[in-house]
Image (cartoon, rainbow, N blue to C red; front, side):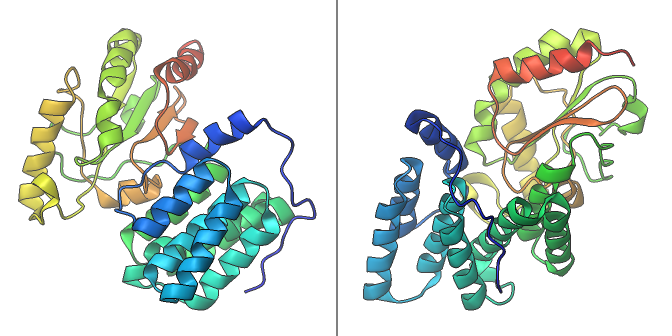
Length: 316
């Protein structure tokens, strides 16, 4: 597949420190366990060192050939090159992935998703927002795996969700209190916190979220924490849906003090609809039901509070 590349292949000048901060956030540790090559590549990209990452991948290929670890590393090179403004390299790596993985395969979902993600970003830079959305929406129609669908939807949401009416939450099971309907909450701000019971970054948000809820609850802020079944329970061991929901309830009560009464609906399609392929994902909805903030990463308490203040100050 040929990928359109923007005529400008370098990003605007930015300090090395700022670039390192951006890449460090972008390349934060994922939930999946990466192999040695991927860890090396991600470390190099976090430092803005694309060339060293490329050298490591090239040497690995000479010794080992093309295998899932190699393709996963190429996926990281594609994303890193795009973030660093090296569009031609990003396009080349995405094309290599497309040729090696022409269709969705269970053991190659991460690099397959990386190719789609990079293609969409390059398409947006070259041809505009609409072209990128059409590409992503076409890929979403073909995708079968839940994590892949969530990842594609995340990229759609990053382009288009803010300013739109918030999608309704599904009527999934809830191991805690009943999930409220977003329509019934019209007139008051809503903060959605998408999480997973095994997610360390989610647990790190517990204390800030508890403080935010205490600060804004009297003003009408509602916090809802949707999640989904991943098929694992305590210590990452395989679990039945009932066992996993029991583990969710236990983790929420033990690891999220001050949030015990927050609704935690369990619904896969809600997670997909909001593109919660990364946890935590935060979504702020204003009094009119429109999405004002969509971020598939952690946020500082001060920045989240600032955004909530803006919404709280607006009239219903």
